[in-house]
Image (tube, rainbow, N blue to C red; front, side):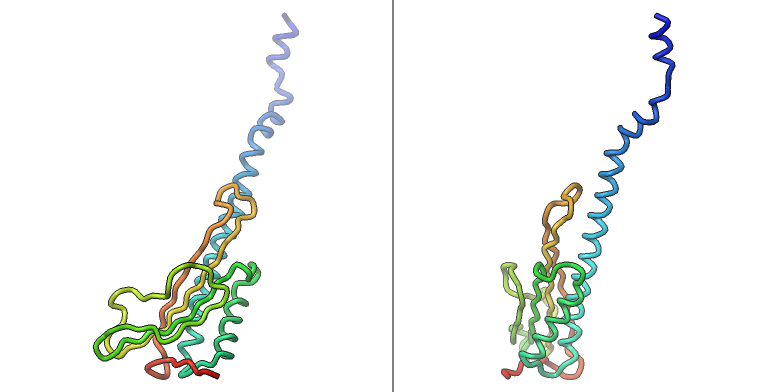
Length: 173
């Protein structure tokens, strides 16, 4: 009986037991934080890619296929250190005619896998206006899959008006 009372009062292993109970929770919090921070960084980079694609294109009066390839390559550089194989890029030019009817002038993409055609928000263009739309998508794969889904697709759009002309044309060669 005296041995049972002494054992109940003994607290020598309490810290080890508390650590064993808290450690898995702390590890999950730590790994979850890593996942969330990486997803936020990927999201930031994808937004930057979309903005850069639109900006580089809108600075030109006319773009050749070589120019567009260089612009798309620049977008892929901006996503580093994330994998470029998961990056989709698309650049599109839209123009509204004198009646305000919007049409797509040209579009180029690289590794674009998402369904749907490029589009503009309703009422974005007025008559005789033009805009460059750049879309960037990225399929983010979570490292651990503990907090976030194993895979999620991020999509960003950027809209910029041509800077030195009323429309950015696409040269054939």
